[in-house]
Length: 328
Image 1 (cartoon, rainbow, N blue to C red):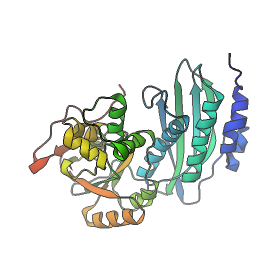
Image 2: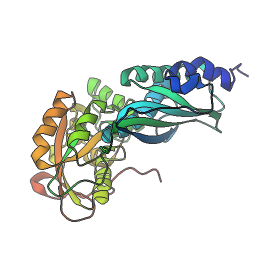
Image 3: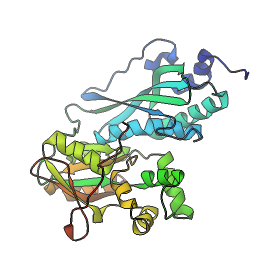
Image 4: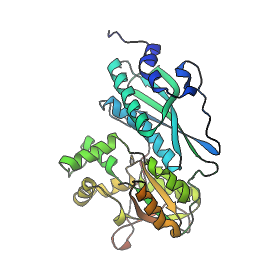
């Protein structure tokens, strides 16, 4: 049997160095304390990822750490929040190694530096098999300025950040379930987007200032837009011809008849979907550009209720077998 360190040694070696805020008490207490700045609200978000469902068991440990953290940060960005810290719960299967934990902690350390956050506390435990990671992220917004799903109104323009469908297509490449395969950098980009989500933190202040409603695209563009419409009591339209696609995704959509549905419903994009009043739409796009985040008009909010309608060439509705990915 491999000689492996115990729980408290793991914490001492790999996780205590990540707990840089004084309120974390160096992970020597049962709780942490965080005092938000005056005039701000504290925003909480938690997501759990598990081997075989959200990542492959042979994915690099630093990539698993990055994904676990970034999917939470993406939700904060869509609420207009600035991230400040997080709690980590890590459950390891019977075949874990210290080198895996070391690489996992290194992935967290790299992202802490990139996003200006710190570990505040958490827990480690055993699990029957695989790896499960749960992170609760904390952020702040100006008091009363959180952007919820429920504020959209008819006439609002719907924007999405970045490009859509890359991660879901990257997953299909990994699984071998798509016929046309891009090569070289295009394929690498799709695979990388599945491994490493890119939370749009720079967009958060723009969302906070100008969006009426927003959420991150985690389960699929159409399905998450449907969540926003339901919460706001409105309907919506998506122009499939306006979707922002990377070069690899564009090639797959042109060559594989099933790829467009994957783009629309596959999920794992972790881009921001925002509704913006039409008079503010140009300013939203301009401010997003100044922040270094490309945004694209992909639809609008309309009167009525029900799932959004997806329109294709010549404005004809596109039938879809499902709206989004579901875990159940």
